[in-house]
Structures are given as structure tokens and as C-alpha cells.
Length: 378
Image (spheres, helix red, strand yellow):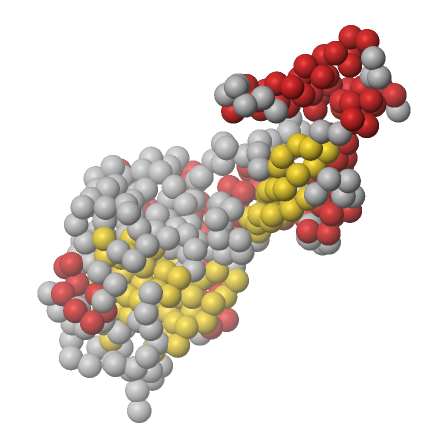
């Protein structure tokens, strides 16, 4: 009776990513926390492998964020993998750490890697014990126009051995990056499973072709914590059994906040925010609809109050229109220079003869004037 073969499918760790696009307070360390979470994903994957009874972790490309990570980033990552001696780590070159640009990186891995780490720098079969053969497709260049999985069609494996492909790139169904992996590659290459990397979100292309996504997310696009896949295959031809295991420590999430004038902006904002765990949440709020000048001020103040609770917080108001009311302008001034300035800015903000950019500048100036006057009055 065949024994079920189990392994962990992960990809796109991007160890060493600096997150320079994330604002950081002078006394803050969110970038460091995000960087450390990517390294810590190694230990979480090792624990998943132990929990699931898997002896192999397949990393489908972009293990490192750049072609030239520092020696400490490389050595510490390899050491973390070496601390899981019961697990074999299979590292595939991806776009960011491709063979041409990252040649010194892969030389360093060959030189310094512990015995349980295998660098897959050639498109040649590797035995994964007696039950399975790993068929890797390392990325030679950062961008290419050909299907990187094409060599799988002619790669050999022993009779009765599971054929497991490992590749990095986009499937034709959803990418326009140039490198197009055939969605039916499992059939043309007689694969029992094709483990793919590059797409940072979880996606099942078919029963046998899967993107696991990044185990630690790094963008607002996917709106969930990162996962890896625990894969179990009963034997050649059997449909793989896939279990998603959450591995991400940070949640990158974005929500829409539809508003209407004179709505309680602070309460409405609070209703869409998580109640707990905010320190590990990167939050983006997209305000839409219409709001009066006072509503804009209330919303911004509410955002400023809650922002320090989060790892990162953004309030986007580009899609939030402003409805001007006489009572709002009266709060600025019922007459005199300030009222003249406010009336002039409102006229410009609603003018059809000005460009959109000029109207937005006027609207922003009016909102600032209103906020300053209201703050001074309190």
C-alpha cells in the first residue's frame, strides 16, 4: 500500500526587503518589524512542516528580495533553515534572485548552506526520497518571454515516482508580465503537482497547479494574512490534498468607507476598524462619497486618533467629494477678509473652467482654512 507523500509549498519570502515605502516615526521600528517577520517566516514554515508530518519545504522562488542581499541576511536565513534538521529545504531561483543577477548569492548558498538546504540552480531532476522526484525550473533572467516550465515536458523520472514540478512565473490566465506559464502544464508534463511562485496571493489554477502566495504579506492587494500549503499525495495520479496553513504575522488590509454629509465620521470610521490586534495590522481606509467641510475635519481627527494603534495607517480621501454648505462658510467668518477668501476658494473648487488639479488645490486650501479656524475657536 503506497505511503502518502507530504510536503510544504511556499514561495516569495523576499527576505531582506527594506519596506522603504512605509512611513516610520522617528522613534518607531515598523520597517524593522516587517523585515524581521520575513526572516521569522522560516521558523514558522519549519513548524508547519513538523506539525503536518512533512520532511520537505519547497520554496518556489524569490526567497531573497534582491540579487545582492548582505552576508548577514544570507547566513542568518541559512542558519534558520539548518535549525530544522528534519526538514529538507529546496530553494529555487526566482525573478528577484535569478541565476544571472544573483550568481554570487547562489555561490554563497552552495558554500555556506547546511546539509539540509539544496540550491536548485539547474533544471535537472532531484530525488525526494523513494516516493517522489522534484523537477525544478530555475529562473535564469529577471524577465523573459518564454514559458519557464517548458523543460518539465522532457524531464525524466523513475517509474512509479511522483512527479512534482517547481517553478516561478505568471500563468497566462492572469498575468501580463511576459513570462507565460501554460495553465495545463500539469497535463503536458505528466505532473502530479506543480508548485508555483511569483503571485503573492493564494490561487488554485487547477487541482494540481497552485500558487501558495507569500507566507508573510507585503502589500494591500490580497487582504489576508499569508499562508503556505501543506500538500499530501497518496500516489501517482492521485489528486493532491491541499491544506492552507496561516503563517503571516501581519495583516495588510484595506476597507472602503462610504460617507454622506453630516454623517458621524468618527463613529463610521471606528465601525470598519478591527477591535483587536491593531499593532500587527497595516490599514488603508478609502473614503468615498460626499462630506461637508466639518465632516472632513471630523474624519481626519478620528483617523489621527486611531492611527497610533496600528502598525501602519493610511486614510485616502481622493475619492471623497466635498459638499459646501453656507453654515460651514459661516463658521469660517460671516464677513470680512476670511469670508472673502473662503468664498473665492469655494468658487475655484467648483469651477468648470479650472483644471482638476487646480480645483483640488482650492478645495484643499479651503478645507485647511476651515480646520485652522475651527481649531482656533476650540
